[in-house]
Length: 144
Image (cartoon, rainbow, N blue to C red; front, side, top):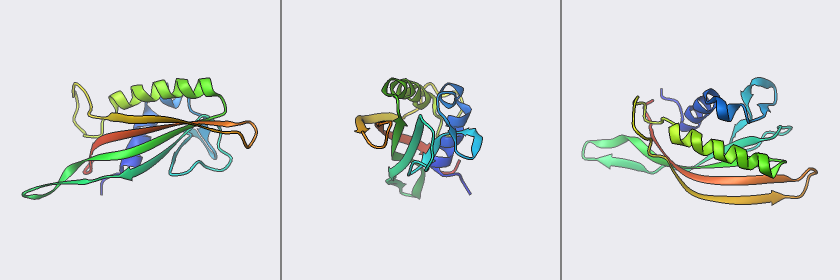
């Protein structure tokens, strides 16, 4: 059984020290970065990243479904400090530049693409929360 795209992203983000060192630790797991599937955990520390896979259209050839897919994934950076959130955003782009979802070594580049970025602000609770939503297309091999 292959790992999900979310699990692959988490394992590589945890191993990418420039990003992992910026994120808070997950509640109850001091060795894991604050990186969550679909929803921010209650009691989370900041900054944190929430990952939601939006869609994953399947590609087909004459022989059947292909193992590779271009998944649309939204990453939301949560923080109580807008400048720190921007720092996490810039390091996150560096992470995407090197994220290997295809399982081949020594590729000159990985076909990941940021389609859009949107800012948000929630004044309650105190302190306020800033969000940066990064809409990305991630190319990956589903058999990894």
